[in-house]
Length: 351
Picture (cartoon, rainbow, N blue to C red):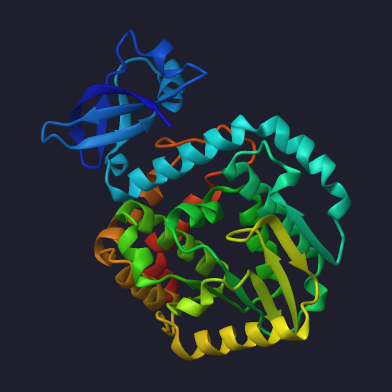
């Protein structure tokens, strides 16, 4: 995805904020509907700050002269990851927005079925991100429709093991609502991911930051996050184990989705083995959310003090001036919630 970058020098008027002069020629190129744009501000020490072009133009239209921006918009691995994930997801979903509507209509007969297995050939023209969104939404609806089949403390197995995949928790509207609804139904849950050392080594730090933020969002809702490194867990489909065993898989499979409201005994046995293994050997087995997140950061090779400090800065400013999705299917609510949670985690632990 190409993004038009418009460079501006900044003044340094005060602690924590800068002034950027939009210039007389900035409005038209920054507000073009067919192009994403960023204002890249450069200070006297050659530090770079990124701002969403359309948001910047809208603000300049309400207030003339130099525009104040937060130094939290510093371009680093945190803001780069957010811009990368939000922009690429936004473009992909907008590109197939009409087809997503028609695809949901064609596949509506699967709603409410106990078992459903949909091949990719059912939606051959959807791009990969749009297809994943459709599968994820169906799986979320399948689980929430069948929550009364579950009991006790549920164990959720999810297949995201890279930040690119985990960004769906931070950006897709239905994922945030799914977390909120399931956490209200079950105040105590566990959710495990398989993240190997090879996954960590293959991911740039800005992508690993997204995975850490997704874990933080899960912890917001009282979900205890666990990590498995076991190679044999890589091919296990997404499932929920709580008395009964439910399958809901949209990622890493051969089709668009596969769901089963009550898995057969052979799969329940596999799921039970996964749950027991993760319970005994989680890579981030700590007693508090703060310690778990610090352990996740350590495993992902992300300096926790840096990450915590940057979340503190962004918690005040928010991410919307840095990146603001256009698709109706996306929201920055998950991002802002995760960032603020990390920022105020010490206070929450003391309360």
